[in-house]
Length: 123
Image (cartoon, rainbow, N blue to C red):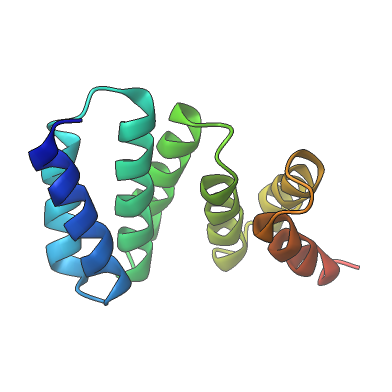
């Protein structure tokens, strides 16, 4: 990723964290046009997916998160956000095995702790 794209991506993350979702969405979409490496694309799609979910564009946001997971299947944070989005949308049959997989694959991580907590509601 070139310096300009990295700066835009960092700015998009900052905008999302601070609740400036329309600006974050615009920047993420601009960065998507500039990235070509799978992990960079995953990071960008992850941020865009979270942003879209936050503004109520659930279908598109979930698809971006799923695309991010496909590009970076070993990223526990992306996996957790996919599972949490499934939970939020009432897609429990999808979320439960995703959460269990996080606990199994990434023990002793914050993501596993959160996944365990979410799984406790199914007991």
